[in-house]
Length: 468
Length: 74
Image (cartoon, rainbow over all chains, first blue to last red; front, top):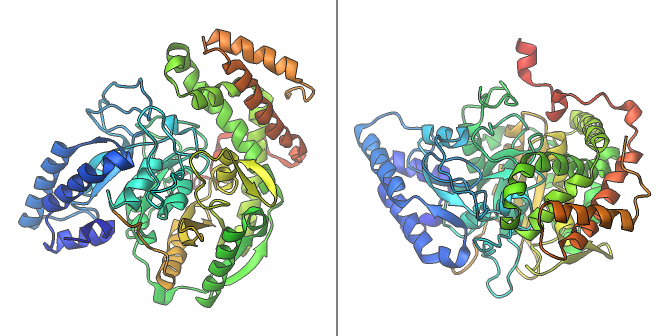
């Protein structure tokens, strides 16, 4: 039992199905850890202790009766507090939303259908509008890799990443509009998977930007992320943007039969990263080549427009959703979020439409590159997790606002809609995790997961922070 | 079709003050909004360099990385 908190989601599910672990003892174990550590870590906004234990007892009874079990049977999984869980409020990390949801979101109902136990709801940057992952209302989750110098956990899914990294959950659900799954995964040394746009329903969630929002897993391994993705993926009549593309039945990967993947190293992103990230990326490229991959440099002419497109679209869509709320509750928003939302008023209708037109060009160029490569390779973020109070970071000799720096390499896949996975790829000299990002073909998350898993198995970067 | 690139600091501050008044924001917040708006507009103006003559008109399917498979099934 002593290392149960470092077991992955599928490993736990296997142990439960084989009756080596009881869902009740697993849930109790994680509840005890939350009690012990989360006052300091601040990763959870609410914990469903009684409901989770009741679900665990039902799960245990099903195991004993020999009933067919879902792929996540008995595994406790918390969700970002943007997703509705029936009977509980969806706060979005705010201080003023408190109405209980009347029904589960589609993601939550699919997790339950796969056998998962919803353990609680996780902290985030208010309304998912910030890559730093701070929260002035409920406290900022602590990046568990540095307890001496507070570092940003990354956001907006900060609670999701911290809970997984510190062993307060085997996996979690986050959302990603400009990088909000991958950035905190990178800062906290875990895996984060943003699926293809249309792969996972957003029904029953609070939006940030309808045409850029994605939900997906944060986990300890690529295969765990895959198993959770296949549990929540699929067409949903309640979300008309969801696709009928079939999801593989299993996230399991046959490495022995892996093809010789071709990987395009996005040199324009590599050149913008700081030295320690560049070194880690070159080492990762060498490791992937040693696995039999072919790694070649590639540049995308239109990638430089991704930031402008993302800023214009997010600014317009976020304001469209929030303006009525701001009229009633402006004083209750965090100042940084309120100011960011209101800058949307300075955008024109032409800016929004032209951003959508530019987006088509970016998508087409990424698609074209992915006819030559199985995936594109880039850093997830340009530095290790910055200190909490660092307003600027230095990149290639230039001072860049921390917020902008965190989003530099992740916005591209939101704008184009392609799937992307963040995977640990080393540590900085100060012991902070570093992360590589793989961007793949639309609706081909499986190739990303296969490459990421092969890389994980060949490298020693799946580690845990000390003291938890 | 787009924001006047010559929108100067004075114009931004005027609009930010009007917003602060409209939403009853705390004193001093208009200046912060004006600064952020200047940064946002500088970023968004990069769209002026996009060769949009090659871009298709905006449509729902632009939101997805590839045409939604249900299109070919219907």
